[in-house]
Image 1 (cartoon, rainbow, N blue to C red):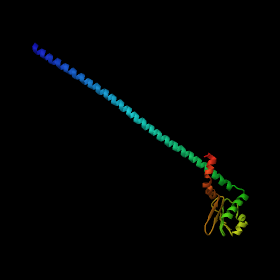
Image 2 (spheres, rainbow, N blue to C red; image 1 turned 90 degrees about the vertical axis):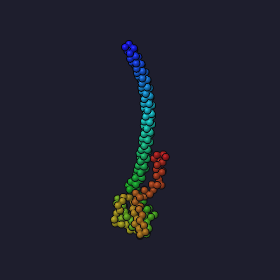
Image 3 (cartoon, rainbow, N blue to C red; image 1 turned 135 degrees about the horizontal axis):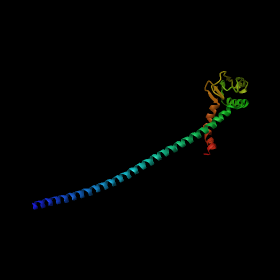
Image 4 (tube, one colour; image 1 turned 120 degrees about the vertical axis):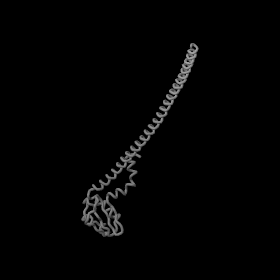
Length: 192
């Protein structure tokens, strides 16, 4: 039996040696797989971090661009409002003229634009009256009539004619001169 026990012991010893070799190889492969996994995870993490950083930088750049455009729009709107307020101020000053200056200005408009037999429509502000106009030489010379119905506007007059009507309201006159003077007003206000 000794021989048999020796053979069994040898088989067990060889099996244990073989098992130890298999475990050692498996452990080495497992460590190698773990190291490769860690390396891949680190590489993946770094790549995702780079992608995320680039995406964030792109998002920040877009938001910055949008913010800069918004600021430019706000500044432009403020400039436009400032320019508009200059023209509104001109309109208000025309409407606030003393009666003699107001009448003189309206007479010059009538002399320049009225055609024979036009009807003059006065503004609703009541600065000048029908009586103020009917006594004027230009009204008599051009055979103009003054409407007893006031226009739905403030400042200036309207001329209603057979061929065409002429809007000589102060608002219209100011709006008409805007294109001519807007760049000058802008240069005066903003220096550009």
